[in-house]
Amino acid sequence: MPLITAPVIAPEEPPVVPPVEVPGVGYAAITYIDPTGRRWPMTDTSLDWYALAEGVSGLGAAPYTLTSDPHPRGGARLRHVQPQPRTVVWPVLVKGSDHQVFTDNWRAIGLAFTRTLREGPGILEVARPDGRVRRLSVYYSEGWDGRGQTATGITWDSAVVTLWCEDPYWVDAEPVSVHREAGTSADYLVPYPTVSSSQVLGETVITNPGDVEVWPEWVVTGPASLVTFTREDTGKAFVLNPAATAHGPLLAGEKVTISTDPQSVRFQDGSPDGINWSGALNWPAASLWSLPPGDTPLIFQLDGAATGSAVDLVFHPRYEMA
Image (cartoon, rainbow, N blue to C red; front, side):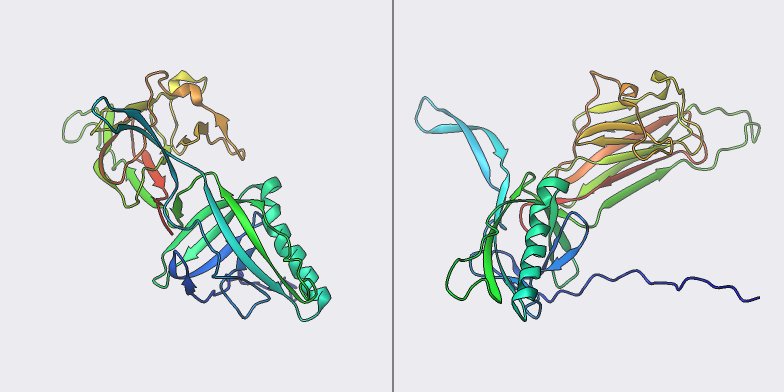
């Protein structure tokens, strides 16, 4: 008897966006991704909407506030540098084959921007011809208004959108991942009785290729009874002690995720968000350190390690400019 099955639908490929010359960026293809995940190509002039080159700003280096102290001999001495939220000004042209098509496009694109205020940030994505992609999280601030001039608002109009970015730095779309895993355990009796209560999984140098520091995410996979993460150049460290919870040591295959910004520790019990394990860190001595640009020597040490014990480090490099 033949079986009736549903057709297999291949996943939709993102549209190919042609690169153009963008002031302050250079030759690139730019796409806006709204909070629902829909991609809006912004440099394809064959579409009914696209960004206008004239008037684009805010895509260069991050803005800073400098704090200084007067110097007795004159001038001042720099005391502190504080990165500030970035503002991007983004002129957009919208059109349609008739008034209704234009109106539908205008409303849809306007909603794609304004919904960031209710559903979370959108993403401004800049793709270079060599395939490298950088992203900037954005919120709508103001500007989705028509020009209000004669002949506009019928089959075409333009808006100058202002986007607000809480993190001023561009983020690489591709993460940097480091994996360290315990080797196969030796037989206890061969060639002679041996016991190892801990294993150094990573005494290594991690390279941050970005322009500014990053705060990585760690995933620890058991078995493990105590995990120490040390940044050798500064001596900063933090310790995960599963015994500080009611659970006890991590069993084989169990995972804990440690985020350094925002700071959180979650035991992965199968629920969407996991269980809060913040009490498993050695507060107040714990320092959830960042990785500066360049090379940083690190050590990951697991007590109670066995076959399958692992530490994974993941971060997205951050950059001053697109």
